[in-house]
Length: 134
Image (cartoon, rainbow, N blue to C red; front, side, top):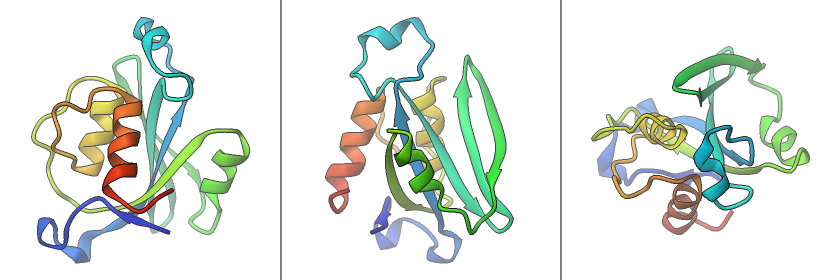
């Protein structure tokens, strides 16, 4: 079931798209050892007309790549590899501000304006609490 990141009055409904928020242990930053296992890094995959676009913050440099075609089940692909995935619908709402981290990058793409969300696990809890169970 898709979760809606925004309430109806927050965004223009016509500009929503499907996204996957992917959590895993791949964080290479020195702070990763202080983070909850399984939630040391996060990135987002957005469904566009021509395929899934994966946007990831890696060592202060965002990377953007086409992962696969739009008909591929990318969520199943990630889950089969043991990654935690939250499926959401996002709109084009501007973020309040974004810190230079993987969490800040994902929050910017999702349009989440919660400055106290700074770790991947906090983001996961926010998405899970705000929406229907995963």
